[in-house]
Length: 229
Length: 126
Image (cartoon, rainbow over the protein chains, first blue to last red):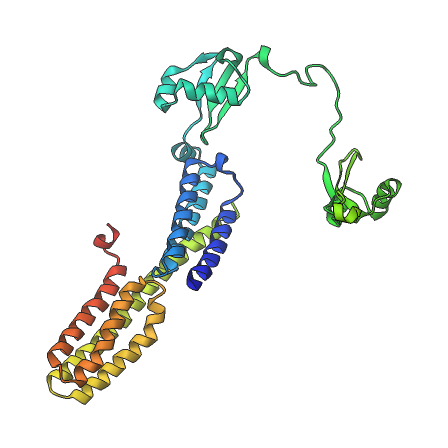
């Protein structure tokens, strides 16, 4: 039991490090080869965790090999378009100019139900609302609505909206982030000036953000019932 | 792209570790098999004390190497050797020469098998 516990911790650290080494991607964004490697790693880690009679190295070496191969393969696909086409495949156009490309759907074994489901997920009730639909190499369907069904944008309305920039979190759960404050071009004096009028100390703030236009959002911490009493 | 160097280094280091472990296994199992050969020859010539000394030598070798061997061989393979090695001394001390020789032979096969399982061969790969 104790051996399994220690092995689990070791393999947990290795698997987490390996996944971080592979890079940030969510399950839905994985390429087929990355998905296969992720599943294989979990399987490889599970065997020496349970079977204490199997050497730990028989789990670690395949994990490191797979991760290294995956990184090298992804580097090759970055460098070579041809390799990228072979390994990741090509995006497939399923709807072109409002017409379903049935031959392509048959080739991909993509049923009309799958297509309609994906269109509904992207907010389109009918095929005639869509100009183009492209099945990406990671299995996601990109849908481009026809002109009449496109949402109105500020650009279409000739409305000038100033860019607010990325809001920076300066206080999170009562903790002031000095690097974020500096990044936002502010200091503690500015922070005090923002909080004093509303009678809050930094520790009483749950979230405070500021964007490049100076717009601040302050959410005070909720007071627990026993603290009220 | 900055991760490609560590990935290549890992892919170089892993075969080095594998080849080193393979070479280590070959050396230690050969050394232990030779000790068993000597023990068999001494037992056959009637030198029981000499055979006991060789068995002690084998046990010391096994105790010394089994920790490292356990890092790349399934532990049940080592348990077989442990059980067989434990029988050697009582067998030779109780004049069970035939059983002793058979046990030595069985141990040699098991040690060879340990090395064989890690050997780079088509049989093992397939």
